[in-house]
Amino acid sequence: MSPSSQPSTRREAAQVDVSPKGNSPEAFRPEKSPDESSWGGGLNTRRIEQYRRIVARFEGAARANVERLVPVSELARTVGATLRTLERAVSAVHATTPFEFLRALRLAEARQTLSTCGSATTVTEVAMRFGFRELGRFAGEYRDRFGESPSDTLRRSARGGCEF
Image (tube, rainbow, N blue to C red; front, side, top):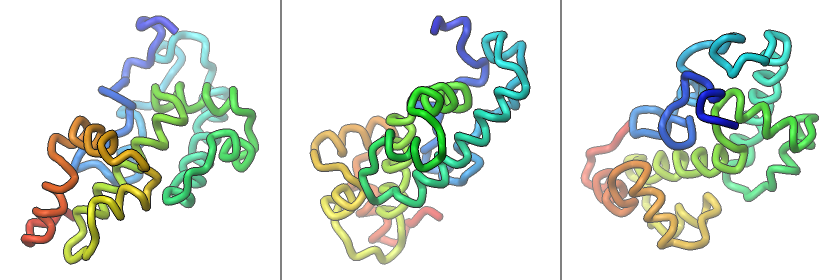
């Protein structure tokens, strides 16, 4: 897909707002509603609504299994779509792939856990809980996404400077 056919509401990175402020369900929605003119010309209203329904079911299944490493193909079967249809739907709605969406969701949940006041845990426990087995990569991705290391987030929450 060429850059000119990408949705005009595309955000940086994975289209998923996992900034410190954006962990609400609305943060996983595009800023504007798509229409035929802004979505690469060719997606009709019926198809867009179908994609939104598929993505809503995918998001629900992903959130329900956020602590498990569920293959995208299994989630596709769960939501009643083929893998290719799920890929197209997530791409149209979030301008990313299902895999990257799941990864961003798991990173956001890890941050939320690390930011929780009084969480008596370690970065390693949180990383493993959300399926990040390579701790160095987890720390690097976390730093890239949130601008601080996971241990800094945990340290701040332990001092009482929690985010809610």
